Length: 378
Image (cartoon, rainbow, N blue to C red; front, side, top):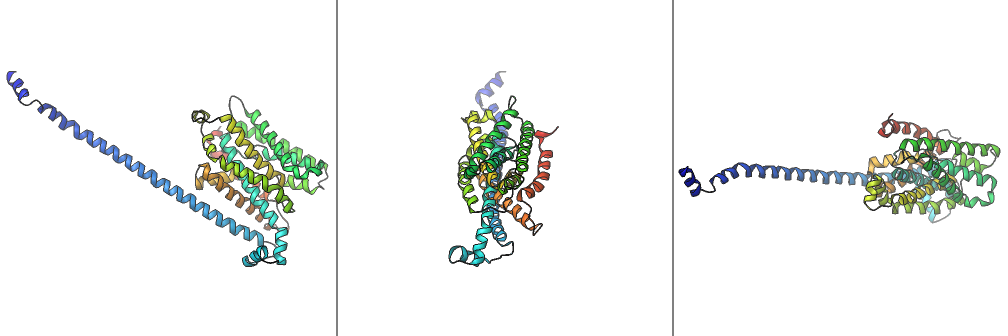
């Protein structure tokens, strides 16, 4: 015992050093491995973000290029055809008869397709954000049908108020949204209840619109164009009616894009971040209703466009609404103009309305999303 005590007094750090030699290298090794793993994760995240940003940039550029090509193709489909140089000279330098005819007959239709498509697509993005429902679409949940019904009422019985039709259509869209929202609420919003209620409200307003169309004998071209979604006979006056409201709505949608990111979160999380959830849900919903209703008043009810385009956008540019909303404008304009162009050519010399083309394409797309969504699994 005395020898052991003397040995410890002579070498007081020997045991500690031995213990340190056993523990310290292992601890350092674990710390180094952890830091290396964190470094690899951060590097992987940076690489993924760069790839995502590159893909989004390429998607924007490609979509803009496709849109320009489609506009020129749409201008030249028909008996009158012009070259790009002729089109430029006829629009900006001198009068060319073919260009003047195309400008009066085809350009209003093209412009309405572009802006109505952009508006409905962005409306779908906004509804999916505030309702937290990937299947929310102004056509499916009854907004377009409500707006269409009121627009038909005004066109059929108050033709003197024609230029105020977009405002009346907006009121109809608000009414439809209020019905869907209130009837779907039961201790919270259920995605399934929203869809089922929206389908019922849409069917009701669609039936009323068809009844009014029948009561007028189908002779009113204004009523028929709204009910059937036909933009064949649109003029520059219709463009002037549509553009101010759509431009205001799209600007508001961009301004609220960051808020849409927060509204996509759970309500408790959004409230924890200082968001007035109920107020923002109402404001963003009104912007979405405005965009869908104004488009319906001029171009008629457009089904599934607000469903297809946002999902395409999320695949290509991600779920950040600051990129998703601008991309949906481009993609919505492209998709609806493409549908209109196909409708003009698929049964020439007869025409199929763009809304019918969208229904044919969108129906199967909706079924696929419905089957894939876990929220609707039985």
